Amino acid sequence: MKRSVFQPAAQRPSARATLSAPSSVSPATRLGNRQIQSLLQKRTNKDDPNHAVHSVDAAGKIVPGATPAGESAAVWRIPVQGLRSDPNAWAIVLIPNLLVPHDANVDVLLHFHGFGAGYRMLEPGTRDYAGVLQPGQLRDVDLYQAEQQLLSLAKAEGKLVIAILPQGSERSKFGDVPEHSDAYVQDVFTRLIDGGHLPTGAQPSHVIVCGHSGGGVSAARAAGARVAHGGRRDLLLFDAINFACDKREPQTKKDGSTVQVCVSCDSNEYRIVRAWVIERIKQDVKQHVTAENLKKRGTRFRGFTHDRVDPKRDSCSYGHWYGLLQADIDETIANLHVSPEVAAQLHENFQVKRVAGAHEDVMAHGSLAAALSGG
Image 1: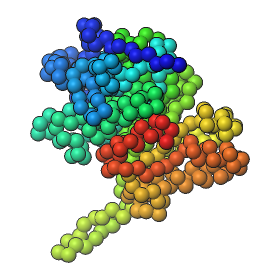
Image 2 (image 1 turned 120 degrees about the vertical axis):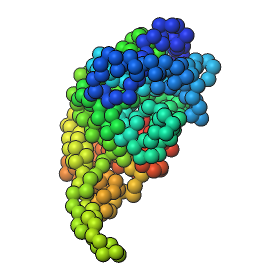
Image 3 (image 1 turned 45 degrees about the horizontal axis):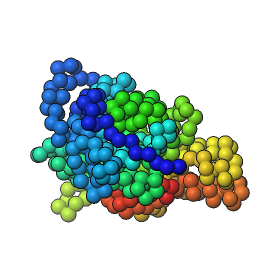
Image 4 (image 1 turned 90 degrees about the vertical axis):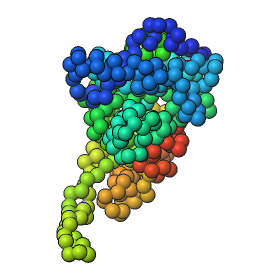
């Protein structure tokens, strides 16, 4: 089927009028009208990527406006604020400007960021949580390379995925978005259609939920929420099975002083993800039965970490918890006593992988694009 190109409506005055400037607060925070107006007045510059539509090319270069596909392949970076679910919530939406026909459903990546500034461009003199994101940079462009990977996927495979990136608090709190993600995604689509950035009739179809670092809990909750339209939810976790110290012991330093040193960690995230994965494996086998159906319709889970995957590693490491999850997947499939073909497809659908990069950029280096294309 021939792919059509939908020209942006950014040139029409009404297309930009529906987009408001993002605030620097979490979705759960409520601001008074005076505070909101103050924030909006500070962000009225069309060159501010937190305020206005921009385009990102394959090299990560950012330019103001929605570049038409006829001029250059790019991803539109669209700030959206004022959603019905929360007037103060905002998100960044990424849309490759190579679009599908008007009557097509659209695959959606719903991504929850980790600790830090989220998608705000840092002001000079400010510091992000991990100190990796620098002033003038954008997490989705410079650390995740999300735009570049979505564009690569669209160009190489003709696969369109738009990304919705909710802005959370600096501690990865997203209000009730995870539990009501269906309504949230539909709300965003309505705004995109009204703004001329998606064609009339575009609908969210297959939703892939994704989380990095502290966003893992929200991602797992969103993946486990009821899907109103009956479709499946896939889950991608990038260094998102976190851990915290649960046992400390005194250690004597060379100078004779004593300090408390962490000797073991525990992970609530591991238990949440483990429960979701085991349930989905069992439900998929009951629902889809055959290897062919599992290949076409089965849930996809990818647990990605930059660490070496090994359950015997120090419990204060990503590799330990991802290793335990891999063992859980293997044990759950083995205990089903299914045919070798079904077992092999389940292993294909539920994977734990070590990928390139450090913790803050573990989504980059082609890892996100590979996951979205089935790798």
